[in-house]
Each structure stands twice: as structure tokens, then as C-alpha cells.
Amino acid sequence: MSNQESARTLSQRVAAGLKAWRFGSVLGVFLVVVLALGWRLVDLHVVDNDFLRKQGDVRTIRVETIDAHRGVVTDRYGEPLAVSTPVQTLWANPSETDPAEPRLTNLARVLDISEARLRERLATYAGREFIYLRRKVQPGLAAKAMELDIPGIYTRQEYRRYYPAGEVTSHVVGFTNIDERGQEGLELAYNDWLSGESGRKRVLKDNRGRIIKDLALIRDAAPGHNLELSIDLRLQYLAYRELKAVVSSHKARGGTLVMLDVETGEVLAMVNQGSYNPNDRSQFASENLRNKAITDLFEPGSTMKPISMAAALESGQYTANETIDTSPGYRRFGRFTIRDYRNYGVISLTDIIVKSSNVGISKIATELGGDTIRNLYARLGFGQPTGIGFPGEAVGVLPAPPKWRPSEEATLSYGYGMSVNALQLAQAYMVIANGGVRYPLSLMKLNEKPVGERVLSERVTSDVRAMLGEVVSRGSGKRAQPGFYSAGGKTGTVHLVGAQGYEDSQYKAIFAGMAPIDNPRIVTVVAVDAPQSGEYYGGEVAAPVFSRVMSDALRLLNVKPELEVGATSRQPVNIGARG
Image 1 (cartoon, rainbow, N blue to C red):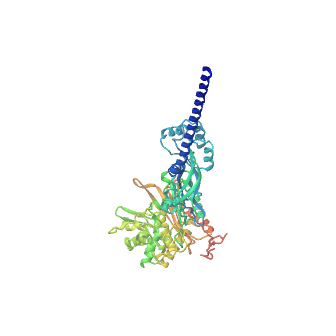
Image 2: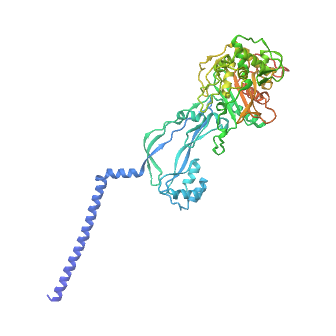
Image 3: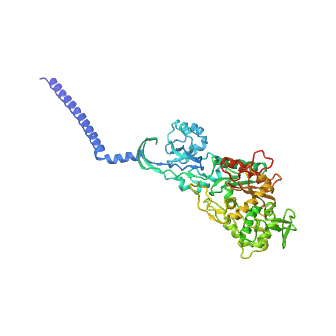
């Protein structure tokens, strides 16, 4: 073999060796990689399986709150007054959303919010994981926002409180805040009862934060309890309409109307002016949020004269047929003088009420003494809570001096020097209407008649009702006659109290009454503040409201008319018949 052949053979052997070495190296590396991958697979699926599963769950499984459905508030016949409807809330995770995202322009337009403010908030809270964009919007609007497919923008279901009757029932029902916590009215008083308890569930989410699957229920939501009110929505609408009309026509500062069921003490209607719509928070005015029928006090004036007369009849010192000399039409107590409209001379106890004689009733009060009248006022509920459970109730003032001055006895007998709310006044007239029994008042529907407390005899209340009937038939309450039903009641006109004391030119016009007079079904109190039309007496302003409301209310309650249709004079027929 030549040297050249030997060199060639050696070169071939070297090349073959290098080729084999390269192949072996590549194969070795491949085997090492395969073994490493195999080991990693074993490590992931066997050794670290639990750890990695937990880490995955942390990133994809979340615990979500299940909002509790707030209870429904209804009237006595099941008509909804407050309901909660499902809505959507838009929120963002600023750490996932670029403030410069072009689609934010469309999002701001859809949500009707400031684009500049939206981008500023996303930039400011970039380190956070949650901010609200817009709460409690209609599902359709939320769907449009989510169609933009912007990273970090999410929705969640919540509930929104809605009030079908609007401002008609606002002062009774009240309203909630955006988190459905009661702020006023029965929504506040019964917040815990209505609220229920939120639940929790475990869910699987994708990388966009959207719920893919419900995994487990941790605790189900417990819905709130419903609230069935004593309010009759038909009568509430009626009372609201008439009160609003009189306040508007007389350019009054405001007004109140309360209607009670004589037989149970249930509140059938309670309205105030001014009012507010709980569905439109932008129009709220703080002075209109109060339920003035319960929270506001006033001097009841002449509406207390029938109650003072009841004290006189109960004492045994007077009978319904007696007379009192009211001459010369006034009484002086030092510098203080009380007057009648004119000198009525000798008049009967009935005419003292019919003519609203301050002199006559004050003479009776002097004979009886302040304690006798004051004690009956207290038994009827004045100067103490009604027990109705409404937030912000004012109990009023019922004086009890250690020694009564004659002027104090006189003014107390016709409703000055004390203060009441409209509901307390209605409660007192309810006692006169039902024969002398004081029932606890209720804003909740009662399934059975409550147990009452007798505070006056049937004889006394019957005599007083007859006097009240005369006020409507021939006295200052003529304009209170409710169509073809009999009625009785008492007018009152009192000076309003301002920052400097009594306001000379500002009055409250009041009428408190019942119908039908011989077998009353309803008691209603109407009070109108500061009428500016030129008329301001209770018989001119409040009595006509009583007439219209009671006429329609009795008809709605199927009480049979007592007075003949088309009669030239309204003579009672079949008094007390019920439909």
C-alpha cells in the first residue's frame, strides 16, 4: 500500500470516527432532553401535582358574593310599593386596563361618563385591582359595554330598589341607598327584616375574569322578608291627589293627611306635601324627606274642643243639654284676653262646639280644672309615642304644671300651649269614633282585630259625635260634607310658629273628622300649612279636602250611601248601613 493510500484510509477512518462521535453526541443530548422532559412530566404530574393544582386554583377559582334579594313592600292588598330588580354593575381592574386604550372612548360614550375622568381614574389607580365604573345599570347597557371587549372591564349582578308608586307612598315607605340599606321611612325602620343575608359561592373564571362555571355553593343567600303594610294604595292615591291639589290651589307651604280605620287602628293612608320621588335621587330636597304626619308638631287649636267637652261630660258636672253664658264674648286673664268671633250669649254645649266658642269651652275648663282635661288628653295618647315604630316620631308636648293658672287651663281647652302630630290627633278622634276604645296604631296589615283599651264611655263618645255631626251640618264644617254620606268633625285654625314666635299672617288650617257619623268607618285629619290664597280657615281650606277624600274613600270601601240622591235636603236614611 502506498503512502497515499495509507493516508486516505486514515483520513476515512478519522472522518468515520468523527461522524460516529457526532451522532453519539446528538443522540446523547436527545436522550438527556427526553429524560429531562420525562422527569419534569413525572415531577409535575406526581411530585408537585398538589402544589401546582393549588396554584392554578388560586389564579382561576374565586369566591363570589351572592347578593340577597331584599324583601318586597306591599300595600294591604299585595300591590307592590318597593321591589328589587336585578341590574348590572360595571367595574374595572386598573392593573389590566391600559389608560390609553382607544376603545375607552366608546365605553365612556356607552356609560354616559366623562372619557377624560375615566382615563384619569384608570391611571391613578393603576396599582389597584378594583374600581367601580358605573353601578346598577340596565342589563342591556352592560351588554353593550362588554361587547367592546376591553381588557380589565367586568360586570357583576346586583339589585336596584324600585318604587312603583313613586312619591305617592314615599313618606311611608322611604328609600334605600345604592347599597340597598334603608335611609328613610319603613325601609329604615325595618331594614334588618327586609335585608336578608348574602351568600357565597366558589366559581371558575377565565383570564378575563369572566365566570366560566359555578363550582360549589358555600352558603346560599337568604332573601329578606316581605312587609305587608296597612296602607290601601287606592286611598293613598286619592289622598295624595287631593292634598296636592289643595296645596297648589291655595299656594300653601305644605300639608298633611292621615286616614285611620276606626275598627282596627290601621293607617289606611298617610301623605304629605311637599313630597319627593324615591326613584329620582337627583331631585331630593332635605326639607321634603320628612314624614310630617309623624315628625312635625303643631298646636291643634279648636280641634281639641270636642275632647275638652268629652272631659266635661265624663266628669258628671255637665250634661249634653246644659247651657253656658258666653257673654260678653270675651274673657280677660290679666293682660291676656280670649275672644269669640262675636258675643254668642247663652248657648248650649253643642253650640259651643258648633260655633267654636273659646269663651264657652274655657269657662268649662275653669270649672273642671286643668288636670281633668290634661288627664283625658293623656289617655287619648297625646304627649306620648303612638307606638307605630316609625323613625323620627315626635311625641309632642302636653303640659303638666304643678299648679294651673287660669289662663293655662283656658288655652289648653282649645288646643294652645300644647303640641301634637297629625297621627296623634287622628288617634284621639278614632277613640271618639269607635265608642271610646283606644287601639294601638299600626302601619302593618293586621290579620285580626287588636285588643284595645277603653278610655271613654260609649255614652260620652255618642254625645260628642252628635256635636261633631252638628258642626258639619250647620257649623264651620259645612264644606266637609262628603257627598251622600253623613259626617262629623271639627275645624281648627291656628297661628304658625316661626323663629320669632307666632307668625301673625301665617296659619295652619285643620279639619279632623269621621264618617259615617252614627257608625264611623274612617277617621281623617287634614292640615294645610300657610295657605296664601286669601282663605286660611280650617273650614275653608281643609274641610273641602276632607269632603272629597271621604266621599270617594267610603265608596271604594263599599260603604253604602246614607243620604238620598237628589233630595232637596239631605235627610239620613238607613244610617250606619254597610256594603
